[in-house]
Amino acid sequence: MNTDCVCVSTLVRVDAATAFEVFTNDIAGWWKPKVRGMFQKGQTGTLQFRDGRLWETYSSAEPFEIGRVLAWEPGKRLVVAWRQEGCAPDEHTEVEVRFEASGAGTRVTVEHRGWDALPAAHPARHGYSGGAFSTMMGLRWADALTSLIEAAAERESVALRPIKKPTR
Image (cartoon, rainbow, N blue to C red; front, side, top):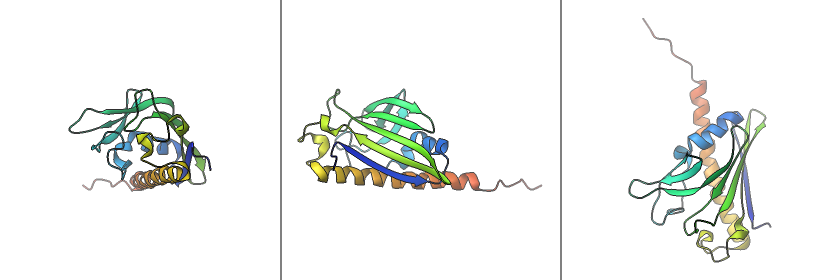
């Protein structure tokens, strides 16, 4: 098992351009981590892409820069340098998200790699190593993608609702 990289994918029932838009523009609505303080100890905030970076913003603390956007290809691919709580400014992993047409929807694949650059005892590993660490990270991303499926389904249902004509 490759413990340097976690890869998770799912299908959403929207086209690739919409899936990319939901992933990026609507991330504040669907990103609901079950781990408190993933980016800043004791804080849970809202994610947003702004100024070529991914941020977590808080109501009572300074925002945390998760990382720079390394590739932004709407409807195709997104790559972000990824830092978590406990990472020094020069320490990061990398998240690549691919959007590929598949049947009546889009396959969204998240590959989170570069964990070998962080020592085994690094705080971002939360005490896990080897296969246990890969499994934990895979489950976290799978949970996040479940929320993405729900957000995309909501977007699809809004798009499919009939437009009501005004009555006179």
